[in-house]
Length: 224
Image (cartoon, rainbow, N blue to C red; front, side, top):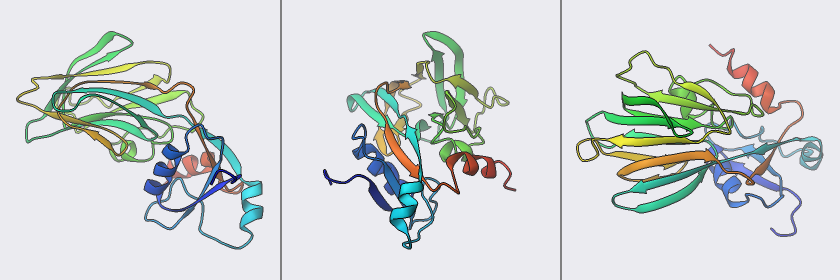
């Protein structure tokens, strides 16, 4: 693996995310071919002329989020997220969450099933399922998206500059426990979660030249 110029991944988006995390800052571009169920991060599976396809592929840099979570059961936990950092209620009780951006309280109380901060790479995943916006890969933005908000009922989230720090504080912790997840790293019973762009950390992903990420984003917005 150390001698490889390019890493080829066979699987779905979950496999690709795992490989991207494992090879952060390695300088090795990663080319995926879809053998899974979704494959938004993958290219079409085709063995013919694979070296030529890889040579012509377009490279995009993926920049992850850093989650810092404090938990009553697990202590202080840090993890990287390529797609999103999400919070979700642990019981039948709706979560109550205070939202601050760069130290300023922007929402005193969000009553909801959950909330997330998604990167452009993750904007077509859980974020899109929760009716969040699709972001171009190179957009310097993050999507702050609620999941089933009860109050304020009509709040659909916000687009944030990727330079900000987002903080979630859980309200009524004992009555309304909340879990947090940075992609597949889950932390139970969090009291607070701080999210920011992980500066100086990136992974490179390769897309076929005839089906770039920008084209996928554009096509996704016209699906019906």
